[in-house]
Length: 106
Image (cartoon, rainbow, N blue to C red; front, side, top):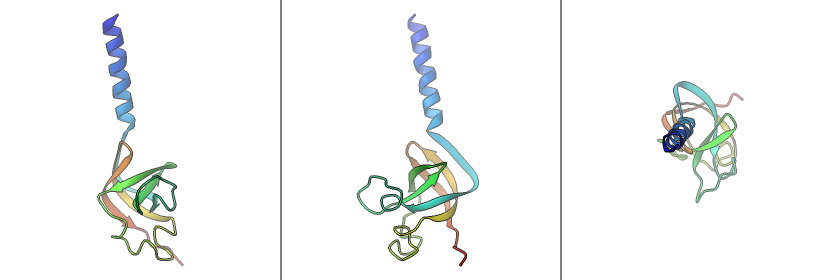
């Protein structure tokens, strides 16, 4: 009986861990913005976030101010932009290996 219980918990743990990781080896278009200002995420200050499949993740590997003035009219705190990214979702964060903002066509 103990072996069955152990196997069940082990299986559940592996399944949950697999859901927390998702790789993006090829460039993927995502929504990018300030997590607090535009995506309603809880945080301490304006931080870059991406939204993938309707779920928002704070970004590691690049900062909000590396992509222009966040508080400009078209900045991340005032607008949701598109970005081409590669990286991996680990837990509740997106670890970016590349992050290229896509310019708006006006």
